[in-house]
Length: 90
Image (cartoon, rainbow, N blue to C red; front, top):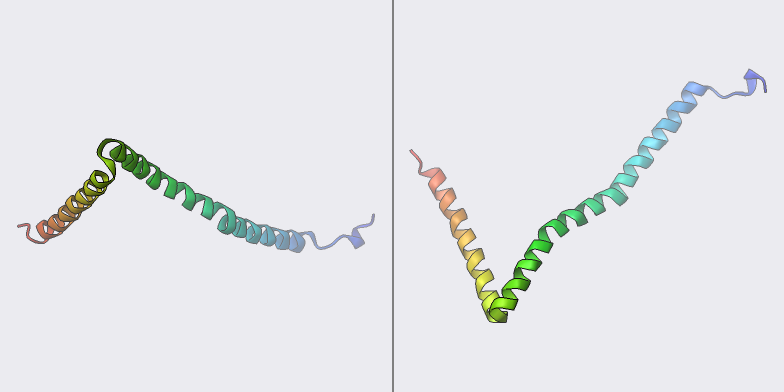
């Protein structure tokens, strides 16, 4: 095969590289990002589900609901207090 029939290798490799970059970006967007979101969601929800399950085993349904509401209320009060304390520090 003669050199006259070969395409411009630098321009062709640049186009191929650009196509691969676009394909890799699409792969990250379509496949890797949803997997990362599912993993992060699992890291958050699995401990919460185990917490609720063991509360349910020990306290029953009404006790579990009461304990979760109590914990959320305490966390909310701590958040409000930390914001108030942050503004009123000397």
